[in-house]
Length: 207
Image 1: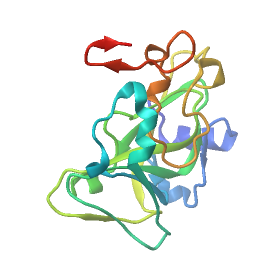
Image 2 (image 1 turned 30 degrees about the vertical axis):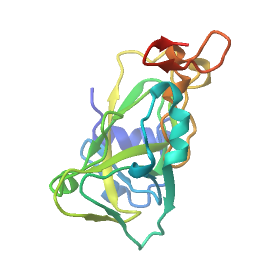
Image 3 (image 1 turned 30 degrees about the horizontal axis):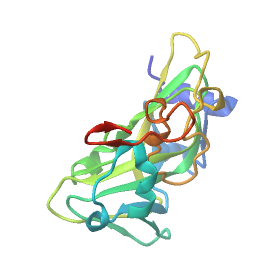
């Protein structure tokens, strides 16, 4: 069951669902979603410096990204073909009986801006800001302003609460994140050797 505005306001008032800060409930709470605003931090990939990204060594990505901070009132220009990690201004706390999905706003979609590639699912138990995968699929640059409503969260009630929600018990990688965070896929079990080190591969196989 997808939560309506009535349900959302009730859960926000109870405090088990947290979306903070919400400065204008009338504007941000939509009929069946909550509008999320763009934060001020961005991670830009320096394409000319990246030879190849290996998922088992994704921590190397830090060498190829530049963090940019844009004050509210200023603009971040998203050029055609760009892929940039952004963040929501709001921090969320999802209770064990809800999941959230990140959706783009149609007004931005009509400008060819998408807000996520695949990471549109927010697990029960997640806490933190939400990293946005911003892309410009169009032919013209688009100016994005921190504080603008850029995405929306849709909340769905689970048939029963999760018994092992997102968090420390699961070794969840992005719990309590602040600002955009690059991939931590190298910490996935399939990429970690039995001695705890990160497994490395070559074209000939594992070594």
